[in-house]
Length: 343
Ligand SMILES: [Zn+2]
Image (cartoon, rainbow, N blue to C red):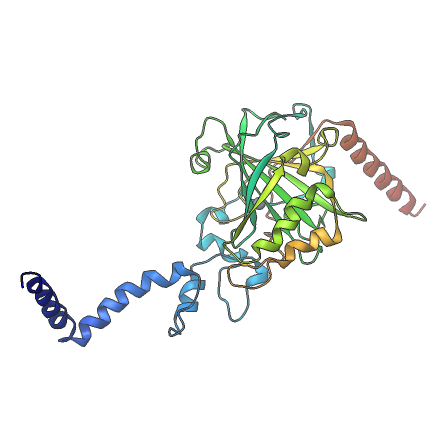
């Protein structure tokens, strides 16, 4: 029959191309396996070399570095992204008495921060992230342009313990929110990262409160559904305004030029770190530690160690509250020095 002829031809070709040379088969397997394993995230059951291949190419937090997993912890991030070893990196420790007042650091103008949206919250293997596509904008705040919010994510400790990325006078808060904005003229984050001031990140600290923060219930409840890396869930009816501080508590903030705090560590970020903290209960803070990293271990201590300022100035907004706090600290210090003098 006519239809038998091509099948017969194919069978003959397969048989003759696979049987003759074992060497040919090995070459073909190597060619396929080498680029395959580093990208899949899991070891093939029969392959002993796969975990090492996988981990050598991945960055991770210090909490993931063990004898078994040889992923690249923060000290080796420059091997993953060359910018990570540069001199204007983030996060930093903010020494309040060395901050410089800057009256240009006026209150921010927020647009669409009040708008409710249904977000998709994702465990991306390093953090939880919500991408934003409803166009929230920030302006003023000493920024040279209007910036559009593209995503937010968080950094935390273990079970509500210290976990913020920035520290203030050496104090580490339990968690830190980063709302990532790009200059409006840039279409994508990738394009904005090519501009030295292309990205503006708003950083908010959290503090432990006795009662739970009801505004965070939709986010905290969704965490149960995204314990596994790569999974995502819908968060209904939230707004950025509901997740941050009341307007009146956002006039006191710090400003400096830095970088993304994960590889590739691009030095394109205008940082704003607010002085006031968002309250969450111990249980709400601890809920983030129930998530898992890509390697299946508990997602805890997801912060990069603080980086040297290397002479970079850190400015503070000219608000009365911050200035008063710094003045009070200076007064207490001088009183302490006065009392400590021998005579
Ligand atoms: Zn971040």
